[in-house]
Length: 504
Image 1 (cartoon, rainbow, N blue to C red):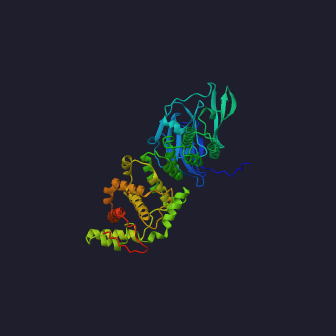
Image 2: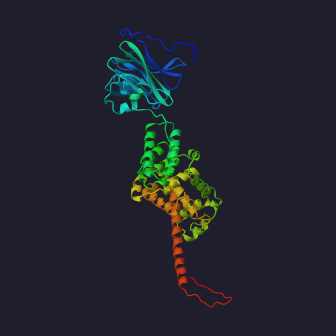
Image 3: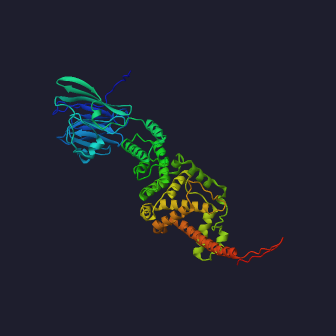
């Protein structure tokens, strides 16, 4: 049973001499129960804080205009919505001073009331019974409005409430001087609100995937329907169903092009990772969008995410390996060895200093979860012709961070102590080198002018020089080994022999 509390005066009413019906037209809750919006029957909307009994703001329409519908608060957009002169929808924010300078739209039919319940989008009820979501109505204010009620019928009272995630109208209609109570009559005449729960949908999808006779086209259609439903309803998102559909290997970007953008919008980076690893036809612009989203993701937030286990386990092993501090044997040696390969010029001294910083302490610039997401980018299919223009949209800080991560991967891969049998979720050495080249091609001029990138570029220059020397020496050894293979072996060696082979 409801409990009645002691009442007190919130505001006083001043009668308007020119308006016999002056008074309160409506009181609506604002952001919480301590804030209310009071609309008088003349021209003013006032925001009050109940506990202080003080007005926080007031807005008035021009002389000659009248507010015909009580104002409501749209919690999704933090905006106020009211109707003046029956057909003019006005929308403003708390910081706005003059209503005439705020957004307004004129519709074709008279509005009875604007409802807002349960944190949903405002619902507009017209005098002749039609119902529209405010968002859809504002997309085309001059759209035709149908007459739902008969000529002798008129709405006298309407309440809106939430019931099992549905918006339900309870209307009181006047028919030939008699009152008639009608429940849910108007709801049937507008597009239905989402009713099935996400868990129910995911259960149905799991049962469908367990069937042996299911076809790829059916799964593609199912994925498209679920994506459309998720886009239309912000409270619906079938994460598990999307993951199961991607794991079925029956989807690609061409079949369901809105799946990856939806995952980015909902910040479902696990699904993004699965799409990058499983879809062979992702457009390069989407790949760059994912790259930017992953780079901007804070490591603290990334560590809280549930990602593909193998990819995270691989990076944790790579980062926490005790061999990170050891000598690099594959051409990138400690400074003492590098110094023997370079002259004593000033530029070479800077190169050696940069190399010394890189080899003294090899640290991954990102966390293991964020690195697992970036590895998905490295393994995604792409065409460098279409990828390069979109890479230029990244700023210098993002580029430098990504290049440092690529450098870390390459140095770790170059160690003799690193196991050659990588995880299936690990990028290959060629993929890492290709991305380094593309990032430098797209941003080399910007990096040269960025002070923070100077040390990295010098270090990279010294590393490339050491790699060139390494492969040059390997080429010489390869030629010598080929000559050895051509040499005829002596068949009669005996029980003991000492042979000297002179390579150089």
